Length: 398
Ligand SMILES: *Cc1c(COP(=O)(O)O)cnc(C)c1O
Image 1 (cartoon, helix red, strand yellow):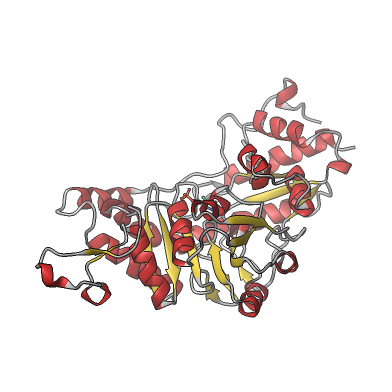
Image 2 (image 1 turned 120 degrees about the vertical axis):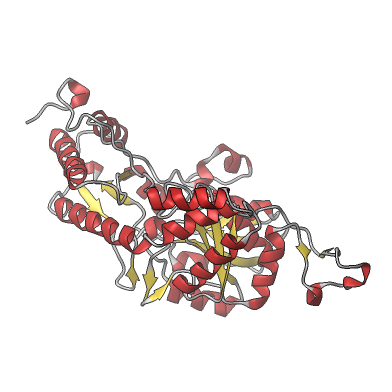
């Protein structure tokens, strides 16, 4: 057996590889430079153009691009009318922003548990957590796999709730043939560099609903409107006149970011194909390793995978998750953990959330780690990751 690098052996590879990395090529660079040297670097035509492209790609009726994915979630909560005394149900196995946006509106995040095989929010647990105060559900397409849209839609219809999909991981995914973005009442995307396509920082909200769309537009630009039909006092003050009719924020995306995103969108299908090619290689390599549990895919989801998660069956290993993590990173394959359950953080603990609240999410958290997955990975990189995981498993096998 090869000695682990952490014990003084040779690492599987020389150069460190990380769990995610953007793909920026000359087309991306040139389009950004063109926009930067043009007349509009913000509030210009590229923003309209990317919104049209997102509408076309997702088949949703409207798109609003914003400064980041967290702003997208905040705008969605504002548009949904979420306020103090409301409760909103979400998953704990997510980035903190999925729950923080509820707090921004003065409402209470309620954590439903996840399905032990797909790691997505469990509709049965959603229903068990509904009260008179429940206003909306924020369901996260964890790792890119679509949530159980059919069941969540049913629950939303039954209890008159707004369905917000946190699609930060899932642009490019389809559910029963329909693109994410067209399915929930509102879908939020993130274009942070680790996500599938990037604008540096960026986000978007997609909706089919005209009223929600109007509120989203207001929310991301100060609550100000130039639209005569929306004004209360009207344009009688003169041609310079606009009105603030609600309280909004400045969450606008710049035109050079929009230009980058337009260029990235052209590569989305290619990114999806390469990501899934790597996922298939990993699935195949790990399927006969009993110490590693693979995330289950529901047949309805044609997934554009953002993260590849290995779950350790720690009963079969002579090491802790931490020891496995450190050994893998010593082989120069740097894993990451997605995510610490949100309510474990001190800020949430101080609000009174207690550990033990969502047993499945906590159990999954104890054994998972994300290994490198991004389209720029070479076949050699993929080979190294598999070799490193196998090497660590073999060394710690009981
Ligand atoms: C990245 C992410 C966000 C936040 O997006 P930003 O663009 O970083 O603000 C929200 N939810 C999930 C699940 C994410 O992964």
